[in-house]
Length: 312
Ligand code: HEC
Ligand SMILES: [Cu+2]
Image (cartoon, rainbow, N blue to C red; front, side, top):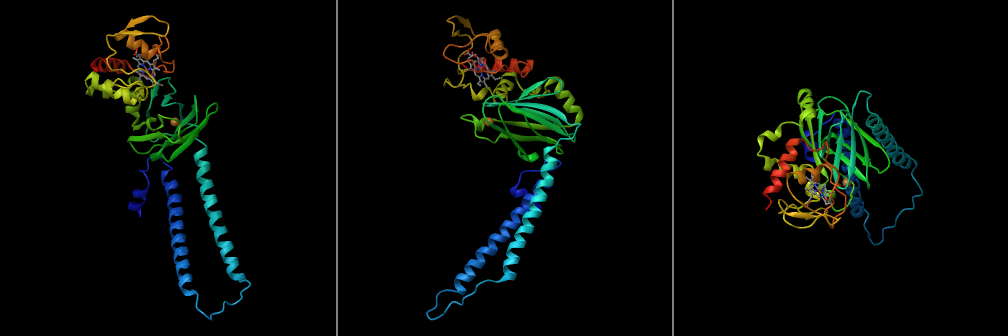
């Protein structure tokens, strides 16, 4: 039956995925059996007792045995399901004391994560394998929902409040996470990658942001950052206006700000736009761009600038 489970459910990436799946599959098979049983019984009775002229229906008032069976059996089933679910829920709700804590901020339409050492990432999580991690989550605007299918973790994020989830990742490599609460136009872009590393790779990643970037020319790395860091939700590259100005053809032009002053778009201007987006506000736009201070490593900024230069 394992092949059937893996057909219906994503890979099991955390310590409690197998338990969640066991309950899920139990409910699935129970529903399947009940559905078939009821459907066949309905068809059988319809044929067996169809209208025949002259046949008189007997007058039956009750059947005590039958009534007890159809009340007590479902009740027992419900009690079993309840306690099974409760046991899992208790485990899911309370993170072990030694968990690593990651602060999560959800915002239309970008995820930011802050690690205990102060480093921050956008739409990108790395965690060490085999260690419990706890996510302490809040929203800056509307309801969002943190959903990591492989870990069997899904929880609402509420503005003005903190909610938590935790899991112990068991499978190395990339997993996927997404927002599971409709939060506006960019909702479907609000997703990212969770990478489970071994201890050494995780340490290295925390310090340097990893060295994937060395495998790409800067402008290609920059193009990837536009997607990964969420710039793409606000900035187009084809000249269409989004939440923010399009990047097409901005390098080397004079940009007018909301206070009427003009500046040349050069490397320094671009870097400032990312680190202190509210220092200069482009005319006709609102000051809604989040600061990427600490979120972009030097190689990311270099890459983005190189990429923007290619957008003639
Ligand atoms: C939530 C939407 C949003 C996101 C996400 C976002 N920006 Fe912006 N960005 C804006 C807005 C709005 C402006 C114009 C107002 C201003 O200057 O702050 C802007 C302005 C800019 C400018 C100046 C553009 C010009 O025409 O002068 C640059 C460069 C820029 N952003 C880079 C980035 C990069 C790089 C990222 C991703 C790492 C990013 N932005 C992510 C909304 C966003
Ligand atoms: Cu969302």
